Image 1 (cartoon, rainbow, N blue to C red):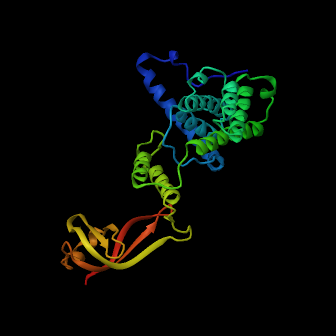
Image 2 (cartoon, one colour):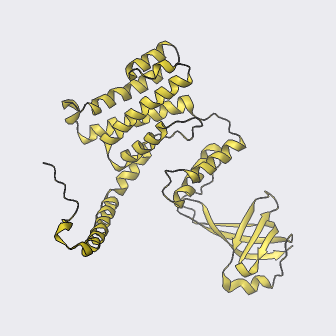
Amino acid sequence: MYIDFHKYNYNLVSEEKRSEYEKRDKESYKIVLQKWFDENLDEIIERKWEINEIHYLKNISDFIKLIREAEQLYELGFFTGSIALVGVASEDFLKFLAINLGKPEYENITQYNRLNNLKNDNLISESTHLLLDDIRSIRNDCLHYNQNFKQKSEADLKSDSLKALNNLKDTLKQILGETTDINSNDFTSIITGIGAGDDIKNSDEIAVKVKNAVSHLLKFPIAFDPKTKIQVKTSDFKVRDIDINDDEIVLQDLINKIPVIVEFPESEREYYKEKSLQENDKVTATLFSIIDQNGLTAEWRLLDIDKI
């Protein structure tokens, strides 16, 4: 039995009232979704952490869109859909690869033959062939929807889905992935690309991904220990910019040359006016910042500042 009653019978109400009924029912469905999401949030997050990471790829094609969607389906627990999309993405990737390896004649043959031909031509390794052939097998089992596939448990579907997804991501990382060295242009492009990504949910996710990118690309421990709740820093600075009326000062550390935007509450405005600070003044200052949920310093505030 397939039951499909998502919407009320709006033909039972007058035309002028229909939009009000729809609005109420949409708000009601928001509550249903929010409750479902809240109840399943821990499992969604755990599945996210099961997926292998590529970090970044310079050379991509449309297959990357399918991988992103497949990853989201896996996170949400829609394993059959994830398997199907990974299978299609795997085929599109191998066509892309064949063309770039000078074998456009392999584009319009079966995935089975495409894989074997590229391996026999020594254009892909045995391990790459094995990873992609496993995906092909899992995908065929899913798309043909045979009796064996229908009888699979949720746990088996989850295992197949994760194996297919990680196989493809591992293959992409091996063949198209980043080098050990990264230049400043690459780094700038990656950080800029994070904010421009069409899979970004909101600005909070941008902050998370930038933090993670810095930790991988620069091998820099940007995040504080989870037990650290506040960061205090005392150093000598040069005043780069000051706007007492907007309660903001830009200070540049004299040692590492890193600038920091410092804010102070309006209630302390008179205190800092009395300091008579000017641009290019050298000062000693003590700053503090509350560590946010990402393990990063948030807004910097002044505890004290004096001219040197």
